[in-house]
Length: 174
Image (cartoon, rainbow, N blue to C red; front, side, top):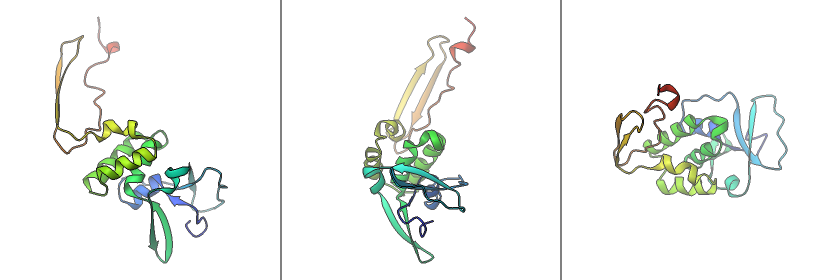
């Protein structure tokens, strides 16, 4: 792909596999191209083209030599930010898994991820997932009186929301 489409940068699921940050095995090769670039015509492998522009296209590119070919791929931190930007296409679970793997594998710093979150304009989307402060939270269901305590130790991202903590109003017989 790099030989036939030199402007391409491996991104999203392909970059996640490259950086070993996912259990996903994409059926297509994900590449980033400028918004107005022509779509490459390749019979194999199947391509999935993501359109990027400005700094979101140009920042975070790493060049690696694989089997004598120069390959361009986004850094781990840039890829994680991209996953949050494209969360509706790849799934929020994939983005959260990538964040968790990159952080625990020390593949990025908090400065790196914040920088790329701003470049990709997803800082507000990522902010809840990037809370790694210690907290204890007591929650009481106002309808049933049931109480829950949530605790997050310092250094662990509190990125998974508990949406099943209490029954929904539809499940409660009033």
